[in-house]
Length: 161
Image (cartoon, rainbow, N blue to C red; front, side, top):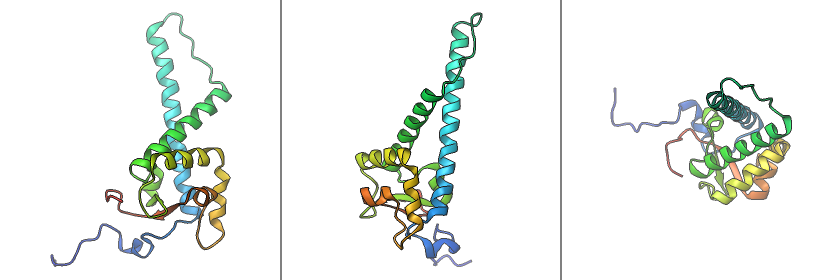
């Protein structure tokens, strides 16, 4: 084994795509994975609240019914918080990590917190904006165009931007 060759953490098959903009399929799969993360967090919170209610009053305990409107609103808040924190700190969510994606600013840097927040709100309220990345050579969603961001292939999650 030769030790003088540089070791690349990017898989050989992925090297031609490193730094390129991601397309609709990769981004959609990452979005579905992130959606599952949010649903699991929402269900965990629901179970924790009911468990706490049971501990406080075990004899009078009745499981609370989940109302659709507050449930959806809470889910959207969790989604926005999750996306904002992930994009502003590391540039990737769990779904992005699985798919080898990173969200970056126009200059290829990590998003500023306000830009990450605006992008997260935009993605939560207008998820169909992602479909725009299926057309055009830039592979940009509506969110990317408005906020000047990009989603790129990046298999180096531990590397700073």
